[in-house]
Length: 171
Image (cartoon, rainbow, N blue to C red):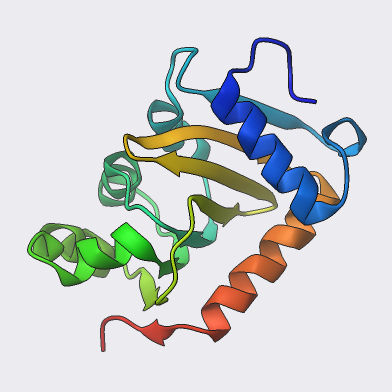
């Protein structure tokens, strides 16, 4: 189980990851931090710090959170990044608001692929850690970041599976 008083979104996220990895939260080796909207700072507010020193980022995201785009735009260092967008994130890059988000991604040389599916869960490999987020109608509701091998292995497999089933978004 996640820490006490973690909130329902964190509990849901942990349950999803436990099911996907077939391993209980208490069994995850390595450091794991969970955070939800119930306890400031919000998950979106924590994203910039989590990505600040990252050298590589590979992920599958159902939303392009403003904090993620701003962090990419404002970085002083290069970042190797491959992102598969699904659901609303795909719509953001192909719909009416595409120019602003696309500009940031192209400026930072982020390779973007589009997947036809959708999911409430985003998975982002950040160097040797994995960031897993649960999205709802209001954005990023909960997240966890860990270097637990079982979760990282699941994250790598998930990113590869989505990448194989996607097409380049920008040619």
